[in-house]
Image 1 (spheres, rainbow, N blue to C red):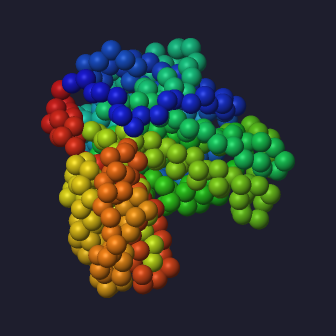
Image 2: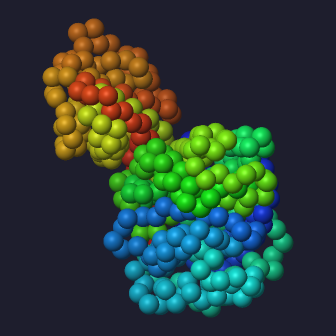
Image 3: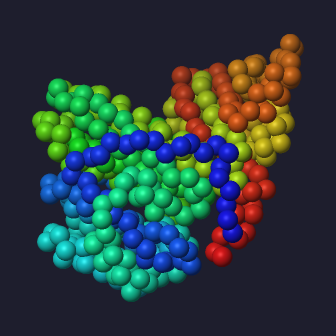
Length: 408
């Protein structure tokens, strides 16, 4: 089934090259399609790595192995397979990953543990080792490609390629960060998100890079949802080549550490929001701001409960200012809340204050706001100082059509 371009799609930006990163793509033909579906990134010796992975109890072999690999802190290559998640495939799935790692390691002369592998697509189908072997061989011999080519090759049901960049001043030098990501459905990250890859020329100690990625994740990837379903393959990896020549960042006391942390979080936020904009069948991008909660974590959980509510999402799809559905979602979140202190607004217009409908509430500007592609919902619990912002999309007939026909 051909999927139409999301009405919320963003054009692919101009992204700077990252010294120490070489990208290549190839056709492994994991599915019956005529497109590149294997991405290979070769990384300079000494590249540091950090990662966050799904907490799914049914994680793929790629995820299980990746969790152990990042502990070593070094990477030389990344291989991403699109069209087959290789999850729930037992020993055959692990053999396929180990085969890819050995093939690339033999080419580079590095340890197999320095080769990271990700796969995305249909669950329960073992990754075909012959296609993977031929695809990797083709990628190793292919000419270098650009960021957009790589972003397209890692996609599955995505309707547009996703990439972003930021920069920071570290140790008196400009360092660049570039990220690409895929994701459109099965999006409710419980750690990170879909498949996302961040590359920087900054020198960052792996342990500190891990800390920064985890912090960024909590404010970005773990604050998005499309359908409330957490993938078996969710992975975000960050690679630092060190080619910018700065003194390696090891902690927040180092010059430029705060700037780098802010840039990394900004990049993750850009990427996370792109995934929501490409939510399967999405027509509206929804920002939910929660304040006055018992804690930041509580605010985030309340925000995600609102964002995952089919009743809220369909009301937005239908451009219906039914704020009672937000009340319902807050009440079922299982978090501290006081009905008589709760306030709700759409597009900056308060519909309810302190547990009561506003006497002067005018639905006309709210109805006009809901007709746009960007929708804002604000919730104030009135019981504390916790706050969080989450992002989601509406739920339309398009989501059903895409997922009812996913395997064809």
